[in-house]
Length: 154
Image (cartoon, rainbow, N blue to C red; front, side, top):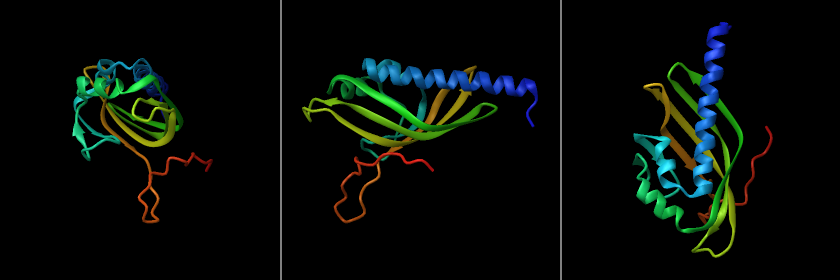
């Protein structure tokens, strides 16, 4: 059983982390590469959808170039996330629907990602230290991404 002090601290930590996630969603909507990079530790391990398999940190200029490849905002809508906070470490897992209009596609797209996000509090601030996003693919030999899947209630 948590003490009242710990329960209060955890609630405050959860609020800070959720505010960080909200700022990250807003930064994608606003197409602000600097604000996206600010959510991550400089040496964070990032396993996102683009090659290579992982990279360290978020380069704001590279992120901005990717954002500039979209017409209008990029929407990130989370669903079924859980958040666990212990001392100065936290992790979240769930789904995110990403939608928008890539210039190369010339039409709106939307699909669900599986996300796992690990955070660390350093100097009183929460930062993402590990982000893993993925899209499943069909195992029928086609290697097609399964963009048509949606989360189901368990």
